[in-house]
Each structure stands twice: as C-alpha cells, then as structure tokens.
Length: 130
Image (cartoon, rainbow, N blue to C red; front, side, top):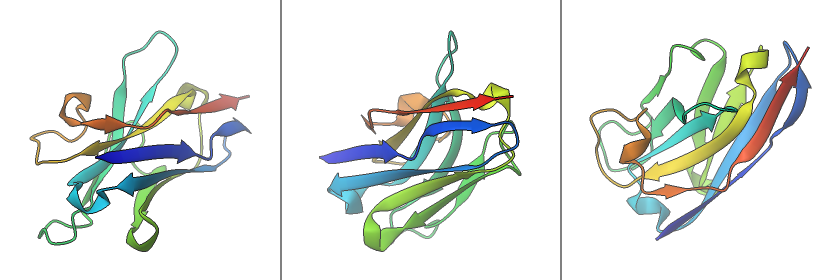
C-alpha cells in the first residue's frame, strides 16, 4: 500500500507561482508513475503531468505534460524524500482547481488518464485571481 499527501496549495495572483508537493509513504518503491491531476469547479478531473518513478525501469525520470500546462509547469522528483513536486509558473485564472497527485502501480497507455491510477491524495486547493 502507498499513501499520498499533497501540500503547497494556496491563493496567488495571475502570473504568480506555486510549488506543490506530493509525499509518499508505504511501498513507494513499487510505484511506477506519479501523476498530477486537477479538478476545477464543474469540471472533470484533468491529468496535467506525470513522472515515471520506478528507479529500476529504463524510463525512470521520464515526464510529460498536458498541452494546457506545457512550458509553465514542471514536475520533478526527490527520490530520497519520496516526494514529487509540481512547480507552477505564470499561473492563470483557469488554473484554479483542487490539485491531486496519484500513484500508478503499473504501466498504462496514457498516464494522463486518471483511470490508470490506484491511489490518490486528499487534494490541495489552488486559487488564482486577477
């Protein structure tokens, strides 16, 4: 079992930055990938970034992003701290959402699809205002 906890959300003005953290406990070494998702008011959960986190895999450290955040958000990992980060720059009002991290235990065709994730954190609110 793996448990996840997000932190770092808050309120920021348009153009500002935030860094979210997703800290894992439990069988972290079994996690194939960690993804960041968000769900805005009245919207479906959207996959925005992921990183392959299983150190023995050839694709360890591989990342990808949704088009909506590419060039503004950066996902990274500190394996020693069992923590995945999401650096968010040049934030826009439409980035307002509850942000979740998820753990996928195996390979999936599309790591930006939430159906492939087995475990979720409780979420952290990000509010961007003008």
